[in-house]
Length: 231
Image (cartoon, rainbow, N blue to C red):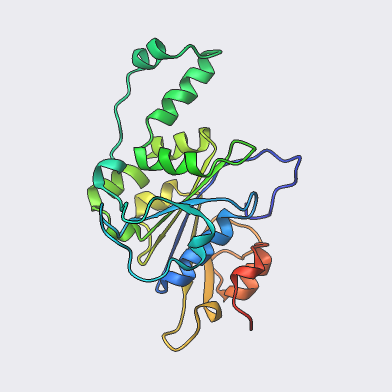
């Protein structure tokens, strides 16, 4: 699942949950995964409320596109809209029924995901979105979004890949719907790049449930080596 796809392979969206005790390590891992195909992504920090400012430097996230400074995340932007099929049919004339269904699926995504997806759309039509610090979200709201099979399905159908970071592991329901779950751990006295990682869900170049150094995982996953500091 992590092997970089060949140009002839189908481009499939994915949803990945990265959790661990070091925010730099988790966010850099998310950036590395998000930039494997097109090098473009958009992001938002869920720990920053609307009108608030993020603490510290965004680090590798600066490589992507973000909202204007001070535009934090408001809970209303992650609520699931209720679109009626006949509303869409009245304003647009899709080429066929499948186009209509895909359009309605996209419009049924939370507005924050739609906004960020539009900011990072690649020439192939894919979008890559990173949401950091999802621990800060209201649990009920978080469950409604990341614990929803419909949301994950709509993201895949709309070719939107979602990468989220958190300190704590996903809930059992979230783990059910995310395609991959990775845990990154860094010792208190170590650099983040000297941490370790294990793949908790899905198989690939990283052995499942087997710890390996972050640098070895970086090579195995074919992530951008420039994101790592020199040895």
